[in-house]
Amino acid sequence: MKIDGVSIRVGNVLEYNGKLWAVTRTQHTQPGKGGAYMQVEMKDVRAGTKTNVRFRSDEKVERVRLDQIDYQFLYKEGESLIFMHPETFEQISLAADVIGDSAAFLQDGMIVKVESYEGDPITVALPEHVTLNVVEADPVVKGQTAASSYKPAILDNGVRVMVPPFIETGDAIVVNTSEFSYVERAK
Image (cartoon, rainbow, N blue to C red; front, side, top):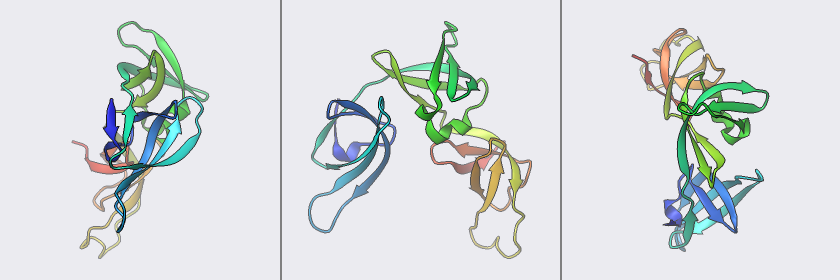
């Protein structure tokens, strides 16, 4: 399916110069003179190399349609992540770098979407939000609560996020897995 250059989003898989590329970062730029363009950082799905490309707003690029299948995360074995199909119990092993830094949010039994192209697994889409416990949070500094300020906190998976001052050690919070950011206190 062809899409405009400005319609490219993080997570899209594009066919560009005969290869499959996963979009890792985008930045829309509208210079004072000349046309708008999208600065796109992409990673070659098979080789793992990265490139930066500018797509003009009127330029068309091929977005690849991927098959999405639910899998359950089982465990990590070295640099591999083991997933199981919940109905057929078929297990697959994927390299941890397929997910990148978001692999820290994987939890035992978590259902993820494995996206494949022509039967070959390419990416893993985690749930948008996960609930984790705060194991370390800085104390509130008096006088800092009047303004909208955030403080660092370390979660039980080792990830550091910025949280509002009312969050304390032991609280459960909801975290956005793509932005590594605080969403809300868990209910």
